[in-house]
Image 1 (cartoon, one colour):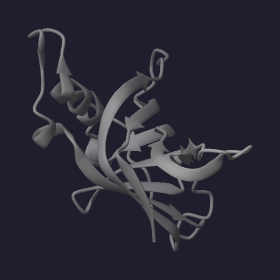
Image 2 (cartoon, one colour):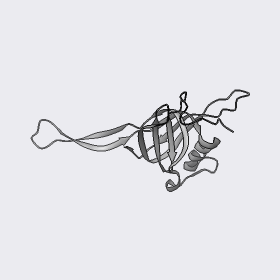
Image 3 (cartoon, one colour):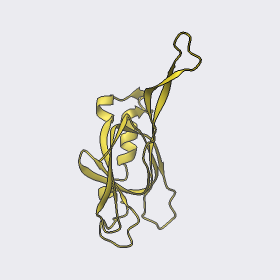
Image 4 (tube, helix red, strand yellow):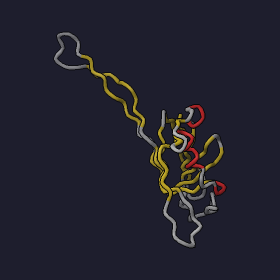
Length: 156
């Protein structure tokens, strides 16, 4: 059983990034690194030219990293189960991308819960989960770091 966070509206709220999976609020995080989007450069050297002409090439989308999070409804294993759906090391098999790839939203909210910015991560899947260490007597189970691989990112 995990921590039951108070969201939104608590003026002391630290978790200001809501993660929605399939439109359902699934977790809240204190920090979020939105994927970097970068364009590779293609160069063309035409005959007789002393300089290359540059063109936009393929887009490169980085990873999303979410830190210090709590899962909704005390679903402490949700992130772990998402990771295992992609690669099940116990069974020695890979998952079906149609099952483990999801479109998720990361919503940045202010201290009273009003949305400031929303990012939609297309084709996201969990590639790394780090659970925090706990001390005796503590019932807090937080996801220290959740790293997502992403196919595309949209800003709304």
